[in-house]
Image 1: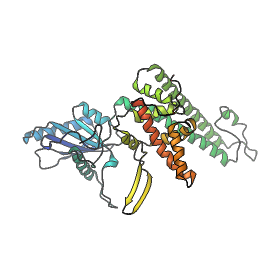
Image 2: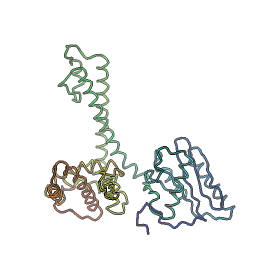
Image 3: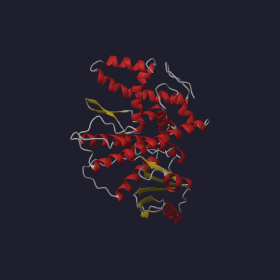
Image 4: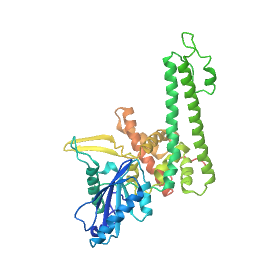
Length: 390
């Protein structure tokens, strides 16, 4: 029997004689729609322009064909792979009264042939087989992605945008330093506030001024760097304003609660809340899998080895939790989790550095589950130091 929030199988029994099943292979300009229509011996296949209204009309035509064949359609189930188009189509179809699902592309089994045929038509057949098994309630065919609301998707954008801007800031800095190193200039920091004014007086080891093109490039990079910094400050100020205004909002309350943990900053609290804790996860196992903090064992006969992290979950959450786990050891030395980590690393022996790197993933997983329980049940871990909530 499917568990609550289990997206690996359908919780509703399939009545194939009254269910119209359709899958969509989506591309940027067109959609290939394949269906299983009760009463029809053929499995219709239709290529449409990437327009939601045309898809709705085609589904209605197939419904009428099924009714003409003597089958009343009481359930219309549509599925497509998660991709560039995101979840807007699933939300739109559900608003039209159609059951819509988004399939995790990595959960669909494919042939292991080195050179296998791959076309849109073959992909729709593969999706249809996987979706049909999922509708029958059989495990292992495919997994569905949780479809977020538009507000939930929008709440993730500031944190992701800031992450991209921080990466852009680092790239610009490295680019300027590399250019100066090519000219033999050292000891000049191009990221300082007064650096643009000092470019004119900058000289190469030969005593000549900067080449004109290099000078112009540095000026453009400095202007771009100032813009990126300003945008980062705007995102951070907007988040602080939202936290100050929305006192009763569930998301803001979670962020403030997480930020009260000593060593856990506001940015990490925002990321974890938007990416993880607002999701309706089934249990701690599903939480660890979503964060990509589970192992990938390789066992066959007498062979037993661990391949490392599965890396199948949310990469942002995985990176943030491993970084937080290292900080946790510095800021929460007296907590039960930190003491557990120290005891386990000492017991492993061998190379201390290797043991610490292996066990930090286990600590990150335990810490994520602990924070989740603190938000859902109010359970405070033993020895955890909290800051006063502002």
